[in-house]
Image (cartoon, rainbow, N blue to C red; front, side, top):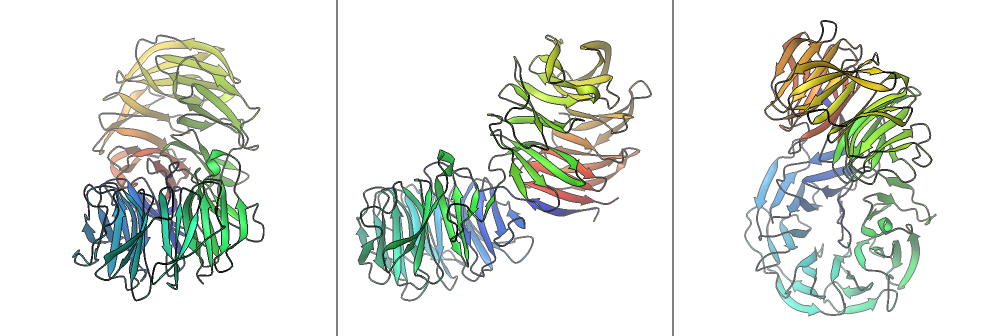
Length: 606
């Protein structure tokens, strides 16, 4: 194999305010899983940098749950498709696919023998179904609710019982199989967000947007108590999770806290204050082995520390929205990857360990369109918030750093030696020197899209929607149009100079990469065909002999300069998502990212 995947840096859960987020635990105890976009992300709970991503759903996935056997996962999406797939193989082969109802699947529960599945959500005429996993034949009816069902759980010992919670403010209790409706439970005054049986089956708990948690008998459904008396939390409760020994319950709430309850004593054991901002609302939780996890509205996953409730043991950060661009930089002998997303968030990854963090302070407020690192060791980023930011990679703090406000929205930025940077905006080209605007070309006569600065620092290449590359010279504090135009095969989508400055590679919307030789007055050197759709990004390897391109066909190609036929083709680099950006860590390590919000490292061998 000329290429193999080296590392996967997974995305965070996709969260929405006021909607609970389900974390699924592995009964064998080593993994947990959640969803983001069309992906199901499986992570090792002891070392979350180890991740795997399942991307076979055609639509947004809402929930995924392990079968008690640990061999299969059931995942459900917004159209009502339920996929049951293998977890033991790398390929994650599909075992069965069902459509229990037409509408969003919100929760899934298995019986302890991994034979039956209950699925609930927003159907048109029915809100739930329960059936055999291998044939799809029904083993009961889920009735008794007149609004969307948010949550379902099945008692993990015989006799089976099933409980549901719905937006009609009620929970419902079923006996089976075949599962038959017994009665509704109307104790809550607001939406019921979560129902969960204890692992030993003696109790089940319901949690609601009214801030209350009720405990019921697992066999009969009789009410036992209300945790915390009249109120368990000051805000709505989005998720609950039982301890493995069934004596305690973890709850996550919109009041920005998580709590551990002693169920028999009806008392709070620990309260975890998670912060003071809206993004600190707690939307999901999972108690697995000794790990207590909660999910914040920021998408961050917190490992709670019972001995020090005020500070989590660790917080997993990353991106929960699609990544638009990335760049790499070596610092103190270590390589770091910087990725910028659709919501303005920039993340720093250690390329070896996958440890990651974000900059402190207030940064971009809208999509980060392009990033690069200048010779002074600053991250130069341009964003749809009409700014270019200079952020020191040593300090990792936005505040008190250079922000250049532009008149028009920038699309792309490139830096050269001597403190120069060139920004391409809508209908405008701006030259910056030492973080100040010093020159602009206001009507270039074409729509500029992308820009690159020659490593020598004298020439600027601007790619246009007119299908041409226009060359400019930097003279002191001005840009001079050289009147030299290079023809690409279509509207230019990205361009880059090789690190030694000998070649300029240009990719376009007509699926072609053209390479020009700088020394020969930019004569066309070679043309590279292979992509099936618009190419959106390209990057030169440090060896100056190879370069990579990524496109909307979800392909990444690594091309050899001297021979267009010799190429490495990475198919489905990010399955079902087009590649949005790529960069080289070294001559044999390529980093790619895409709208699935994950970052991947590949080892390339020639």
